[in-house]
Image 1 (cartoon, rainbow, N blue to C red):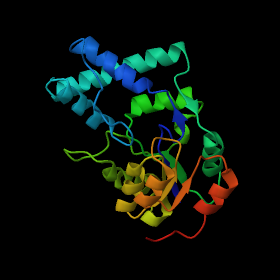
Image 2 (tube, rainbow, N blue to C red):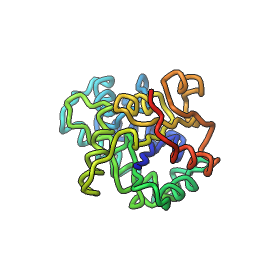
Image 3 (cartoon, rainbow, N blue to C red):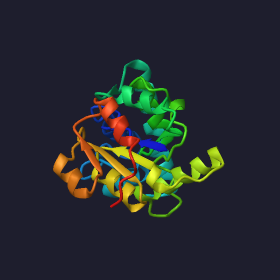
Length: 236
């Protein structure tokens, strides 16, 4: 069994500091009117967000400009996190991470997230999570395709599992836990199980309509969630 957690609004919240720091980075690098207006962040991949921000702000979306904005954003987040906490864990998140990480029937946990690895790790540390506890990961920059999608990430996590464990894992034994419709659809697109939590902007109804196998208000009922995780995989 492999458990993959989304980060933002699933394990933790940051009061949208990433948006503020991306705007600040764009203003420092490109022009004072640089804005995140018109960008959909929930469930999106950081490389896609940055490329779209550049386009929306009439800045050429070149690899150099994308890399510059990524590095400036990382530096700003790191600097801010050294000055004060920039993230806080959501209800039940620590307990569920610990329970799944220590369960004999679960081979590994990891993150499946739109975050870049360097900025995602900062958020995790600030909210009290140890990044090294997440051992099988699919970060936001992991898609090998020129037009990256979240649905490209579960196969990457599965391949990382195979390489780490020297054995296969069936997709139905992979559970993706997230707060957006994109988390649900990326699971279903790859025959994985979807556990959706309505701590983000998506409503319970939207997550149910997207096809989540289970929708919960938050992650606080640790034993109930663990019991569901360990049940026979659901098929849709």
